[in-house]
Length: 118
Image (cartoon, rainbow, N blue to C red; front, side, top):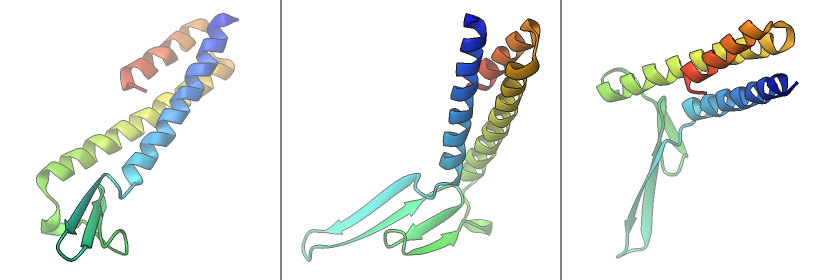
């Protein structure tokens, strides 16, 4: 009984982790740059994410494309998408094994969660 409750809790937490990772990958607000001129009291800002950059506090956005994309950003994109996909697979396996799995399959599901870091 305790093992199945823990597996159900881990399934919920895995789904929550996957949802938060999805929001993080899709968000244009990975970092914020605020440029403020104290002489005239005027400031300008920019936010940037994995897929787009926005100037003027999000009023004007453009997608990262072509030669604008730094090489490090492509690496971050790749690892973020791989993490999201593996988290989705681990969550699906865990939910499935929670419902119909044997003890061995439930242990495998927990091992999959630990392997993906969710």
